[in-house]
Length: 380
Ligand SMILES: Cc1cc2nc3c(=O)[nH]c(=O)nc-3n(C[C@H](O)[C@H](O)[C@H](O)COP(=O)(O)O)c2cc1C
Image (cartoon, rainbow, N blue to C red; front, top):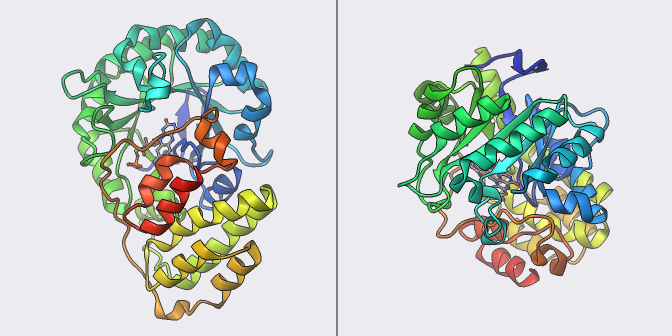
């Protein structure tokens, strides 16, 4: 249940409602929006260890953060224990409060060298990397995994024991396997058995926490110590506050379309302030789709934003839209037919597009806005 003084080692977090690393999404403007709703911790997008060491020009922007927004975590992705300590020190030196190791990314490009969910095939390597990180830094080290490579090789209890022994302070389990990608619901039993295997390490439940009911169920059914929100915050950053308030016994706020508009406009201004006009323009179509997919009556606006010629036009369209005729509908996550591509910063996709648009985001949008998705895929 809600914990207003949640500890990772000696680091006290203001709550145990945490926000996930989201490649291509959890950039600085996104995190500025999340921070309004006071998550216990937010993670930046993952960065490849090799990229951190050898391609800093492209990698450091992924770690951009505001000096006054804390606590903040960085996530490293890699499979080479020999460089883990140096990378960990770089993260600590950049002022991060928490360091996470990615053992969940399902993309072939990442798993082919044994990184991301590829590490689930070699849990002892996870232990080695975590030991090296823990020995190198004072900040708490956490680990984020999928439950296993496939349903015949569930390793969430085993990895929990290994990383606990290696000195990690928390393990987050996304209750899906690598083979499952995003098909079907997350299986929270994989989180429950990890919690049962844990002695001192905190267990963070992740997967399908898109509303208050799921947040409550996640705690009850798994016994986990904390929640990690991911897709549920895309276009509804207030979910963090709604969940927090629910556990505090504060009646749920009714979120009106007008409020949705204002929050969308606020996110727009953060994007415009942070990105080049070209990147901001592209980004707004993607972010607009998140905000508008949960608003009944906003289809026309979504399509118009998709065709708009400039940021100024988009801003005006949002301001002038007849929001009073719309209503916010409960979020649902459409099933994926393929693995969302948690594309890292070094991907050709990102380089070719020149924008932080990833295939995974496009695939998330297919159901909501076929035309937008097609365009994004073409852009990529
Ligand atoms: C677009 C996108 C990007 C993601 N990027 C990362 C990432 O960089 N690192 C990571 O550990 N997980 C990443 N994930 C996985 C999420 O953090 C989370 O584990 C997953 O979406 C399940 O939670 P949910 O069902 O609440 O969305 C990503 C997921 C999506 C949809």
